[in-house]
Image (tube, rainbow, N blue to C red):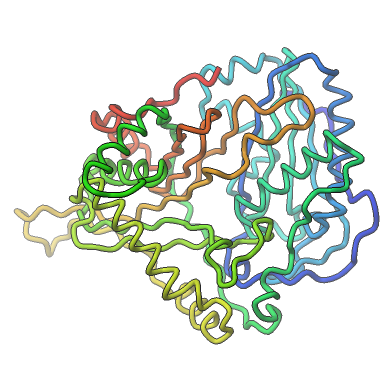
Length: 435
């Protein structure tokens, strides 16, 4: 790999030089970089050099709309919108795009992201967004974007990239729906909140592997769940249920191993927030119940729905209440970290002691990942890269929109066991070729 250039891209026109106050969930989110990468084969529409020149111009223009992205964090709860710009790197890769897509491993993907930023903690005064354009010998390109999680969630990230792409494809179009930066203040003045501790990433020694569930396999899972009187199970519900059950079984975890699932709150707020609300409008809810690991798929789907419904009724609908939000933030920032139960000298030697861990799911499905067309067609593949959080799973759509790719993060020994699970492999393929 050869680094061709590295520069800061600033907004094309002066923007409101003000202090942007983050929303209440942003206050406690750690500033680690969230990564995503798009792969585009060469369709010979124009030269890589002209594509990159146009990308810089359109990025500069879209930053005039997403102006806090070009600023710098002033402190834990606000951004100085000072137009310092976002980092923009261009590299040349001396191989063809197909070589990565035939066997997309972490080792191959890592260098395609800027400055080793994926999931890394943000340094003070660092760029909020960093972009790397990788040019392959074949004319294909891979575009990676890393955004500070404190700036927003996956929905925010995908909306930003889609608006950038639309502006690149139609430079004179002015009809794009504007991002909504004041969602928090529409509830109550965010600047009135006290400062709570950030919920930091607990980095662990994990590796990531990709499991692909084709649409036909997911339909088989949905049929199993539907036959047990569960109405209209979704792709995400059945895939999460299967993965959770197989993780608990394959790793010999406690049957009460906690399960938490991230939920997009925009439509669930009272009143609902616009879909293009910028920030972290995602929180996780627990799926509760005795011996969750022993339940059937249909029961797990039902428990998931019950957990989400209870979370919305008891928590989300109260987020317009300042006092409630303060108590909520105080509670979630003081929760004890999950402990791993291991054998000790005090244990009965004949007693089986199982590990207990938290299993966490985040779904990026149904977000507009494959709609990103810069003018040379839609991407052939969109993915992310491994998270350092043990037993965490990110779900993404396949290009067809019917399947799901699961990025599973575990300790190496555990993942070696999980990837050989026979019941899992009846429905999932381990890291198949993309192209």
